[in-house]
Image (cartoon, rainbow, N blue to C red; front, side, top):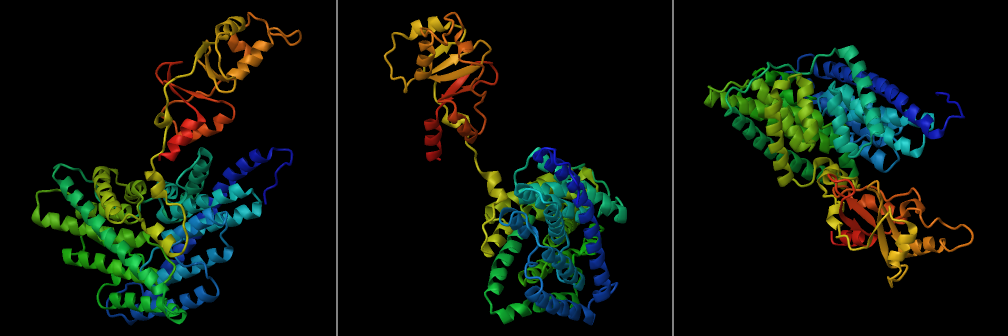
Length: 574
């Protein structure tokens, strides 16, 4: 455990620890994720063989037997390892103060590796995210940081695990921000970046810096080709709806079954997925990255691509709904790649004059389904760029992903991860809903300036003379004082009355020639503008009875004023 001098301020010590531990967490997470991927590859060769092909008996036996082992271990040893890992990490952040047990982390590593390696149609990225979060939770507890820091360490580790799994730090950072934490500060972002970069450095030490997929650079010579990518966006949006509806129906249906049948579900799912591979489509088993690469190099016919996409959705729905631990990222990328390659093959057959490669359509298809199904539009764009290293494809990716995302939002209002949380009886914050919420601003509650305005450069004596004729309630009237440096001061009539009383006092008297702004002291109302969030005004009313709202273009000019009553009335109308 690091030793820290006790005479350092606690916040400063924690800030330094937070940054240093972020790097350490990234390194440990990277090593674990590399080991996790190696375990999957080793188990895949051991259980499925080095070259899985139809009519191999092991394709039926391996996922079925693995399902039996997974059911028993999940029931009696690792009860918290079900699911992909994304919702579990969010639950740790928002419910358990960042706590993920070491047993859960070990169980996720072992059972997800066994499930994917045996052929269940799941992916390693989501479990890697939870493994990284578990590393962060364990280290932060050992160091003994504050509860607030403990909560923040979960997304730091999650970014490290996902970055190592994808070999893509930017995508990992964006996903954690878009789906796990929603909002962030510069300190949190800095820690997430450090951990993600450290994890990727470790992963690249073993795997190299090459992107996961390679396709030729493309150039849009004919603008009509964008129409084909737009069609791909529509296809992806509809496919994401089918995928989400299938999971949304089967997962709760299986959970309602008796306990003895739930114990059999991973084995039955493994048998059904193995049957798909045994009777002709072994490509749908496991993560399927080899098949994605084949699709990018146009090694599948049009009908085969559609079959692979359809049966991948079926196989993933069976595996995930049975409670087998594993992720949704890889199946989503697989399905998107097949649909994209199918659209590309169709275009090449009927519109041979267009120049786009099938590989480029497969790559865009990956991002399309990622954006539509997982509902992370920014992550989907950068994920395609990072896993391919091909930035010439940016325009088709943005177009197709946006169309797919909008269609998915219209047809499936509840995002898939949020749907899973509701099925689990949890109500974690929806990051998509937070992004879509309309914030109220000062301009929404702004009122015209109706209070008297005094000049701060006038003397105290002259100001008293000017106000002598007013017959007002001391507690009801508010005055705005415009200071010579274009700032403002808001005061009740009673405050000014007390100030004027000092003019005639024998002790603590005030010089009558003193400017009013100096007599009131150096404090001024905060400088606020119409476009700022309305909620940020509330703390200021503890000190000020009224807030002047300034014009951004003209120093000292007012757009209007706000009182606490104005703010509360505006929120009541929302």
